[in-house]
Length: 490
Image (cartoon, rainbow, N blue to C red; front, side, top):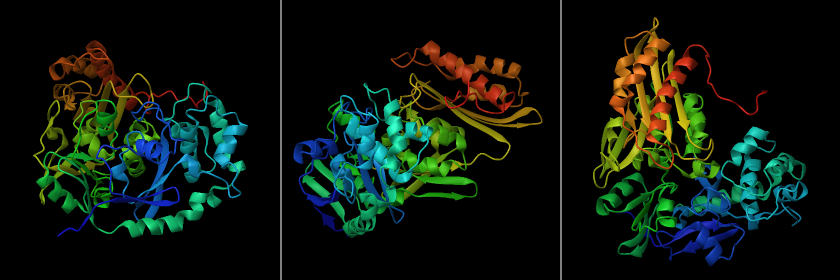
């Protein structure tokens, strides 16, 4: 029998917090501003896009304490059990003066109107803690999720480069408190399920994966929330009632990554940042793709399992995982089953998932030596934008012939989908541009894309065909990706 606790517990800056009055859809931003009068954290977009609400959240991960920048506007308060929330009000130097990040922003004129400044400060703070002397590419990546209409970013980048001249990250307040905060968070882990509220207006935080299965079996209509990068917008933009809510972001059993026999198994609760770190050495093309999914805050919150489970036809991870031949483990009431990932997506908004069943793990075969794999994302904005078309290609060529081909797309159909007619037009043929030109004629047999605000049907079809041609050129003439890097000499 699982014991139940009727409150969430976390640390806010240096203070322990215990709350028994938490709405299932209450955001961290509203709690900070309305209940605690900590108004340095701002609301700009309310959809995790502008970064004005950025705070750091520390959580226990594999025995250590990890701090990550997150969007407070779409982070639900109920997901913070056992965490350490750090807002801009907590920043200061040892002598009580401005924090090194803040002082650098002042001295290098990194703030004009000031509205977005606290969010920039918190993003740069997180960067400084993990990389005290970052280069410009690393700084720009850390600021992908922060928008400023005043400064043009140059001053902010210069400030980021200068932070370590104002202090040492190793003596910072978060570094000095690390052991104490870790011990306090460990003490909060009492192995209990959390339940707050009554009737439909309840939130539940399961104690284990087994407990999650039992909770969903008893509450089949509950909304399961991992990173809330999608569900958060259901509340802030669509005003949807998501209660009852089951928060699974704290389940360590869903945050494991392992590699056995050439297959990487990634728990459904692994966020993009952790997945990128693990995939970089095994499937580099996926790490490059992940760098273009949202900003740092979104990658720190969004999960691989959540991107799969919500079934979006423009989700970024399913097409490349389908091309790689990934499989899913689904779990319901203690019973597990496996299936190819491509079979999970049945129709628009519909997946092969029974009531009360949840995605537990995705298993991704690592491409064999000699095979070719690439994933290309097309969007209006390079960084932090939703996909218009995403093509993924996994091909083996032997003696000049295509011996196997798996091609999958997002944004071209009601679900992420294989291009099976195109594959059939390639397999057994010479890997030449002539073969590719013939194969692109098969695209209409696979896809009938729609027009929407992101792209027209005609553009999507043309882009899909051209991505196959790009893949051909990269695997033959170029030998490397056709990507323009702004850091390379013109």
